[in-house]
Length: 391
Image 1 (cartoon, rainbow, N blue to C red):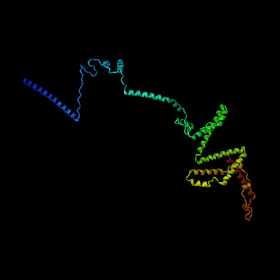
Image 2: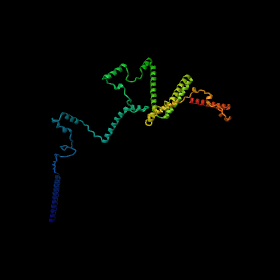
Image 3: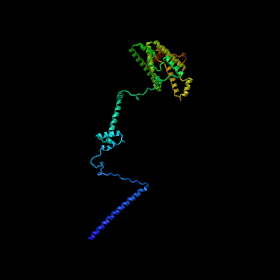
């Protein structure tokens, strides 16, 4: 028994000594770690832990008495009422906060907040866009739209707009403005001339409206035809001008035929003028590019387009003037003898008598045959002239 008890004592001593060795090793290990940390050059000050004497510590309650009750706001602000450092306004706000029993709602999630913001932005954009509903409907119903819709008219601005707030300062400007005011010269083109305004005042209201509409229509047509003529002058196609000249000539012939039926004397006088111009052109050859000016243009025509155009116009004018106008007034009935060949040599020689051509004159049968052929030619020419006139 003694041996067993002695063995147990030795075992306990060995256990205690082992625990002491482990504690020593742990201390040495901590010292080593502290020495390693101190190698950085700076020693950190160890902060002490603060503790409070309380019977029961809980993370959900800060009651120093250790009771089950929670800390109320009145417990915290009770001491503030006795101190004068806290302003009266802050005390009043704390009391109102203490009296209110409402709890603060938890904040919304990020998704719900963004959804509400999108809804508000959509409502705001919709209210702004709805102001243009009338303009959109008007543009949809319009037959034609020109963009930009509110564009200022092109061209020079009116003088009245430019001289707003401007006064003549120099002597020259003052003199010019005095002359304009003395003559009552308008700065812009008026809708009606003074004569037209006087005639409109003499009419009744309905007649004045009708007359004014007619004048506006006439001016619009005039500007339209002027613009059309400017466009046609810029066309350089020879075929186009050829067709236009042919149409003009056809229209002139039609008008001339009507003049012949209504007033032959005036038509004959007009025809004589045209024939005289034709004779002068054939004699002078003024527009046949044979003058010094035309020769100089021929040299430059290779490089200058305007020179070529001028020469072409000269040739067209020459062609128009030298072309004979075929009308019933200038169809003179020529004698049959004029249409027959002239036999100048009527002398009879000693050649074959059976050949009438060698005698210098025709026999009766051959003369009748030639006369009939000449009459047939005349009839054909008259028919051709009538057809050309009708065309």
